[in-house]
Amino acid sequence: MLKDLSPGNILFLDIETVPHVASYNQCEEPLRLLWDKKAAYISSDPAETAETLWPRAGIYAEFGKIICISTAYLAQDVLRVKNFYGHNEHELLSAFTLLLNGFFNKDHHLLCAHNGKEFDFPYIARRLLINRITLPAILDVAGSKPWQIRHLDTMELWKFGDYKHYTSLELLAAIFNIPSPKNDINGADVARVYWCEHDLERIAAYCNRDVVTMVQVLMAYMGRPVIADENMLFL
Image 1 (cartoon, helix red, strand yellow):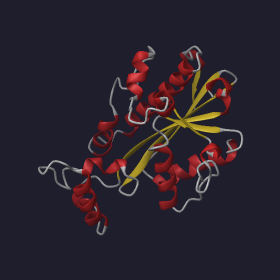
Image 2 (image 1 turned 90 degrees about the horizontal axis):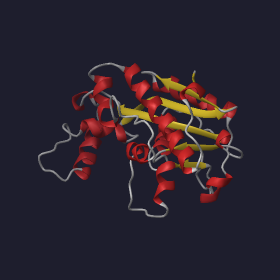
Image 3 (image 1 turned 45 degrees about the vertical axis):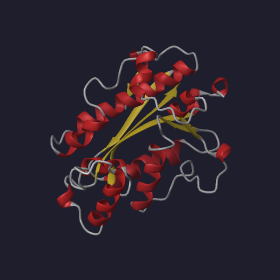
């Protein structure tokens, strides 16, 4: 499969998410009561409560929101990185949808993310629906057969069919000698940096590093050289 890929037909993406409000006590009913049920289900530690588990709410599309989507695509050997971020999720998703509808289609292009099939792609689709935004064709996969879905996943590609195996992007970067994207913050820090430090720019920069690293990992899978910094354009 990899030998048949054309990198110029791939839109790489990474998302950053946070709980939709800063604290458990700010969560409105009935969502707060439903989070109580969710927290009881996901916790195996009796000392944990729905309130202490609230920072994890951001990984669930029903209780979180997207604050950043970094995208990258290759054009004429230049990696073009474009970032969508902000406090208004509807505006962010609307702008991202314009990109998908304007430049990419599900017949000729692919989306690629690390653990994208389990997280990024469904999370974006769910938040689009919650925001009453029509799904772009490339994300509207209901009723599609597996071979019709134009989604790539760098984590799935590394599994080689081993479905119990999880490999982080940071580990893949290390073994392929690619600079780590986690040289400042990591995913576990995002909610704190957003809600406590109010530093969205820092999160956007981290998200950009993640998507660039993912591109470099796929290049390594394909036996291609890494993309040099001078061949990257941040839009």
